[in-house]
Image (tube, rainbow, N blue to C red):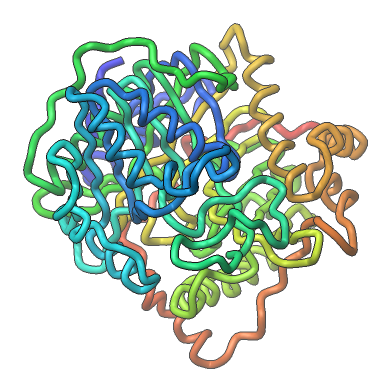
Length: 507
């Protein structure tokens, strides 16, 4: 498919996409491009992702581009493998790759303000690394954004034929296995042997035309951040990593973006429109994993669907608290207010918010950004469920949608539901099959299924209740001072366009 440029805000406000086939992904509206992935796989939690990333970088032929919010060269990529600890540190891997291949160039583009986060943690910022890196290993800090914005995409593109995109930053505090043990000897910062907390995250890997499209996006970001233009990698070759079993092959993947209005570029808020369209089009269940629950428009859209007599169920998995005092003040106070709004609308008892905990009852930090709608859509990306991810920060999400007329509909639907059950099984401490069985036993109700699998002790999900809000908290929440809306409100039009008239199956 050819690239579909995002419409201007004015054009988007009056455009009405053709959704007669029941799809939610519309290029120029809810996504930028839809491209074929030769192979597609999902990595749940960073341990396996980092190990495959190491392999892919060392096998790269011409170019590797890292586009990230944060970057830490001293993390170990595969600490479970035998060998000396320094051999698989990220910086060493990058240096070994360029020194072993004279045709290879590696670029690392980090959000400029992310360097302050690195300094806060006592780690080496990108600007210092540039002084001692080999010539073909280039580090750059990207300050090209509006005041207060962040470059939040998490993309790695290899030879324009392989691309990782999702929610996992290649930095400290991210490595964990899906066991989410209370303590793990490999789960620590490079500057300390003290174990960090359990961390849940998700990303994707694609090959083929979908990877080349993400390569286009990465090179666009590189040029915007550095002023240097990169040409596409011309000699495409098979590059899928050894030992990685694709979840799907020959599948369409949509790329959705947020890009703020800045420096002559127009606002792009495809991700917000995708969220609203997905909620409007949901028939039975919406499953969300999110770092925050702090976007008013999404909350109001959920509340409206909950008010319908035969509307969908919503299950949200959140962390217990945001990562840091200021974030909790901004996002935690908004979550408390919006959960009140949603719960008042939940007159049919179809909404749940849970926090995952370890065997010892320790909260697992949820950094994943996942949306599963019915058995029809799986979205994984970098965008958070807050205002800034919809209009201020740069974001990138990838989505697989099952079209009604797809000859492989049953196969794709099984994969979408399988991923939902795999994620819930991880949080509940049960096999994915047990989640599927519970859903079937409760006549398709995801809410009742999860409720039935909750355990009072040990690894499980716990219902979330926000803490009591003080006067300052309520004021911050009401004014949205720390996370203001920056996009036009298009819920009414999206709802009219995407709301399905078919009723849910009776439970």
